[in-house]
Figure 1 (cartoon, one colour):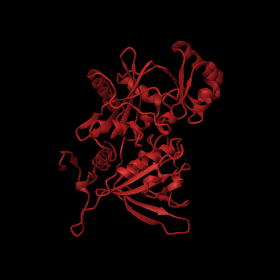
Figure 2 (cartoon, one colour):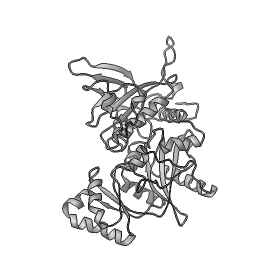
Figure 3 (cartoon, one colour):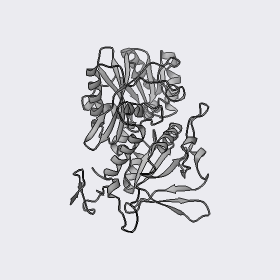
Figure 4 (cartoon, one colour):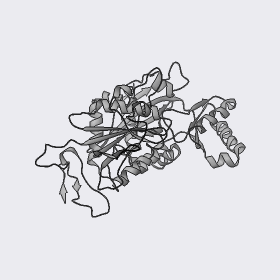
Length: 407
């Protein structure tokens, strides 16, 4: 056995059925005849979820921030149909323009063919194939930076593929990613660890299909107990997509239909009176730490902090949040507790309500938060003394230190 400079045990070979390789920069294999090789980072973005466009914007910001003197970069986009495409490395084309989010197809090098990751843990070479052409090897990838949001990317599906491939990646593993995507089970996990969550009710697809009137009555009864307004949302989506604030029973039908357009499983939450507070968590070598928190003030032109308020109209948050030192310490502690409760890795944004009674209630975590230039996660770390490029570097280095497989 050998030990890294950080004191981690490194296995020289695979004796337990899974890899324990340390791929940090100083441990990459080198040849005496060649200069040190830079780690190669594949930035994977886009995807099949309704958050496709914001993922492309996030990718542009990450590509712009990666230190090219330290890393080689391979941008790979996943189209809305699920095709993996080699894309141009032009971050300026991955921005919101005229209130429109960009698409992977806008920056794909070709409209046909696709990129293939290896499924052999002993081979990290990425291959691109075009119809009628011989497949072309693009070289080995040392780490994947997945900036996908929502289902088919942030929810553990991509993470499982990367585990099978034996390729290290930024962010949480399969379990934490799945828990972080499904708001019902996220709340169940938090409750089991003693974190306080707000009142909610879940309508599963089978309930709706078998007895729609009973499912509607379940929501109406919930409103009778907790009052209006309610927030009706897809159970497994993010970026505030598909969420409707419902002030009375008349608006319930349209809200349910909008949520089900994104996810057949819906979550209904009672409105909480208080302030919206967010806090970032970042994994360092000695464990996770919390950023200074931010506050999301009620937007002037929107009913709540929805997708357009976040990304199109860029409603500004307040960083750092105007909290007392005691409140700041408490929300930072709770954010790290949430990170640990869900077995997260790398990064998390934890969202809370500070109620009028002075209690922090956790609303949700985001295991791959928005990393656009206006996103709160990088802003909170900027206010905590970590610039955007340094933040991206720390995330990559954390992924390179971490083995794939059971850990």
